[in-house]
Image (cartoon, rainbow, N blue to C red):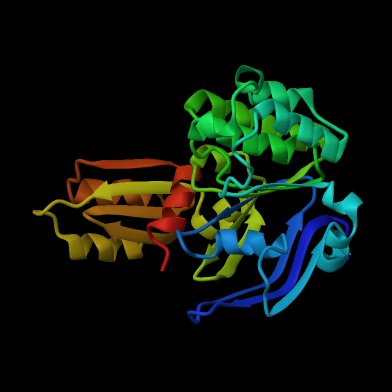
Length: 305
């Protein structure tokens, strides 16, 4: 398989007892990059990651990891040592101390990054038992176990969940460091703009299937639109006329109306016509800016069909 990719999924199908079906195909996730996986709750993001990790038993699974078939990858210990995963479930025995978890990690992998240990501030909680930790502290341990051996392939499922703002910012810097300096590849399920900010690629999942997988630049410019305009339509405004005119603005890719707010996405050339519409209808509440990660997530969740 192509060595440019850390994960390749030619065909993946899962059918569950309640009749739910997930189907993924033609997915090529770049090596040495951070790929963000986004979509509404229940769309299949975690299921996709767990299927890649062989934690689900699909009906069809034509998957390659780091150039090897999924079966071959997981059958060899040296490959498993190059994998690091943080899942939403904290699956460790809670009767042991953090220091014992650190020692276990060293015994399992024979490699341990002091940068990861220090950034996640494990020294300050090393003497505590896991059942005495807060949710954020447990998440730091979970992340340490996934990252500290600097594996070539890392999967993270909402890694900054339960972390305070300072620790979340530290984690973002750490993830950028291990990709840039250690050559790791990260597949990241996220609902947070600051996590999506560092992603090189974006993959969307809706209704149990993948829709797009593009570089961040192409995703914004070609699929969403490089600029985001917003207006608020009041009770006394002619909503039908405004929406009709929005549809006729050149360079608009898509627009959505929700609770009086209209979000308009397109390229920068739409600014003049947009401001003309604002002036024509004497709209008081409006904005025009570059599309950002919060916009991407809003489209992928609030407006996903």
